[in-house]
Length: 119
Image 1 (tube, rainbow, N blue to C red):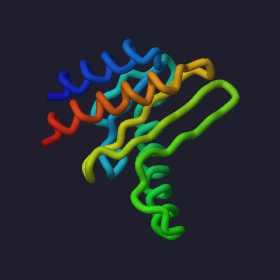
Image 2 (tube, helix red, strand yellow):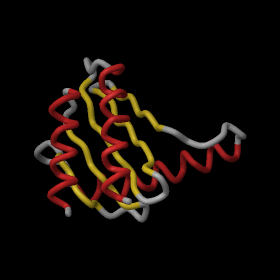
Image 3 (cartoon, rainbow, N blue to C red):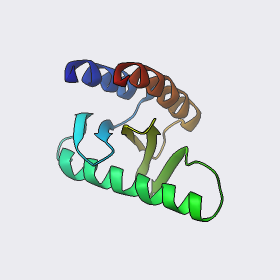
């Protein structure tokens, strides 16, 4: 089963020109990942679940509806976290020169595939 997730993440990274991707359970455990060398899968997974949870609390507290995506922009690129139903989190790492339209389109396509796989 994890092989299928890995293949989906590999496809996302390749098609979107991303640097990496991670699929995380809502409790912060890595399910599958395609990360750059030196990235700690467990740390990325835990941080992704924690930041998405915090984002959900912020949007609820400020009456901004349901959190759809959380973007982090640093001087060297982006990290985008997206919740998948109530069962997982998809994190995507992208370079600063990423084409965000293409990246977001590929993330949505990948979310649909992962929703099917996760049930």
